[in-house]
Image (cartoon, rainbow, N blue to C red; front, side, top):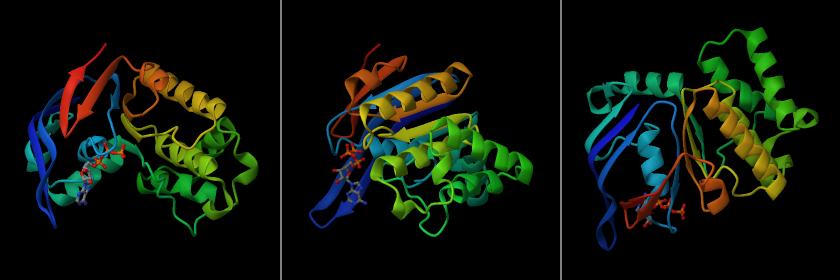
Length: 223
Ligand SMILES: Nc1ncnc2c1ncn2[C@@H]1O[C@H](COP(=O)(O)OP(=O)(O)OP(=O)(O)O)[C@@H](O)[C@H]1O
């Protein structure tokens, strides 16, 4: 599903050029569940953003679902991202002036899901994450952990083929973290390809493969 060949990304900083991603070679098959680990600043979020088509400023080739990302026009890239990818952001990125239910419903609306089905799917994920009573609340009224649950619910409600999750359990109590991991495993068993970034060794091992990053490089691929 994913092939990265000789990916490099360099940023300009006040102190000169900075290599964020270096010589990345990676293949992820459809239906895989992969974890990415590594110290802060290793490039994990940068790699996930590239995979999620949120960043097109890189060197090398990225082929997603048989399409070379570089050859896509802007509108085609956005369309591919919207139709195939769910993204859980490290800092949630919920929309402040939409309620919890409206935040979750928005990507379904973008995908053209009919209203009755949108409502049904929103209710399904809200009850799965024990958030039903907060459906009309606004993100600022929620704890950090609850906002994270909403961010995960929003990403999975459209049933994406590829789910990219940046520290999806970072702000959560262990029982809620466990709930998210079970949701991810269930989605993976149903065919969703998942790439998660995590600092949590136990959660990393739930994936079929654990990648390690250091200084912008993929340094080791575990089981
Ligand atoms: N817009 C930017 N401008 C300059 N440097 C950046 C920018 N974005 C990221 N970096 C740098 O790129 C490197 C990788 O950042 P990235 O966020 O990908 O790391 P990470 O492994 O996800 O870290 P963390 O675990 O702390 O989230 C860091 O050194 C960071 O300072």
